[in-house]
Length: 409
Image (cartoon, rainbow, N blue to C red):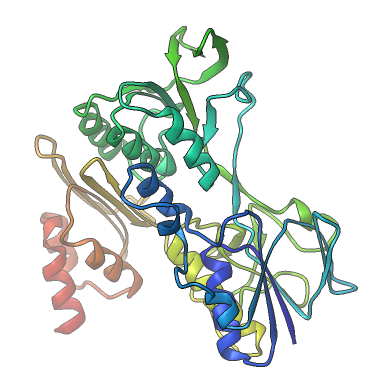
């Protein structure tokens, strides 16, 4: 059996390892699109702050890890998939034959239609090369503009703050991490970061970046002109699916897969940030978080080797440490009318719980670290709360007690 995996992020690496475990005799080829060994993009902020070196980002740090498992690792980018002939064409013209194919090609940063984003000193923060380019300019005291304050933007934000730059954040939405936090939580997080000396320009869009001598000049739709040594662009990502054109693989917001991680084409599977898979609360979503990628890779590999492993659905979840303030979101907290809220503005502490009938279906948390796993557990177990629902609506901080009572008593 010939297995080909396109993409060497967490989903691809874990799939390769599980394929080898489940089928010791099969031929496993793992194709990565970058010159470096497979690495975790989530480790790049730690590289920028100096906590780790480039090797510290690698997903597997043992020399010869893939060779020792009998996994063929090669560099290349897929340009075409031909299901009729069972082949993948790479950017160097090389063709790989497959019996089972896994698409784990991840995502690419979005570049908005703004003039000047191709100038030197304007970078995304997505690859190890991006990190090196940013580190070269993000020196202590340098002026940096961050375009976007979503989840990835706020991860980058912390790294830039720790490098001692003068940071201005330009965000089109009315709050930071708008897909992860509501207005109350987003505004509290913004005030926390402003205490660290960061300037925010909310409800504002960058309209142009121009060269101004040795510096860059950033213009906004509010009339601002901001001098910068570095501009970092973080306005979202899109799944890497262009090479699937003409393959028959169904694509919506990502590669659509069923609860076995199978696509609409026989013998082709998808996993990770590129896959639009079952959501824990119903429907199909792209959940670009590493735990989902890892589980996608494992389940897809099992099914590629003939098992019948059902994926129960990924839970929308994010946990973020922004210069010392922990924020978390789980499940479907937006739009639920049955909810409980506890706010402590002065101490930057916030809890919001969302209910459907007798279940907790979503939660937001800010400034709490002792119950994050419990929030996730209450939602994923779909435990019936009983009398504890009313208790939580009166005092949302009693989630640990509720979890113990409802799961163990």
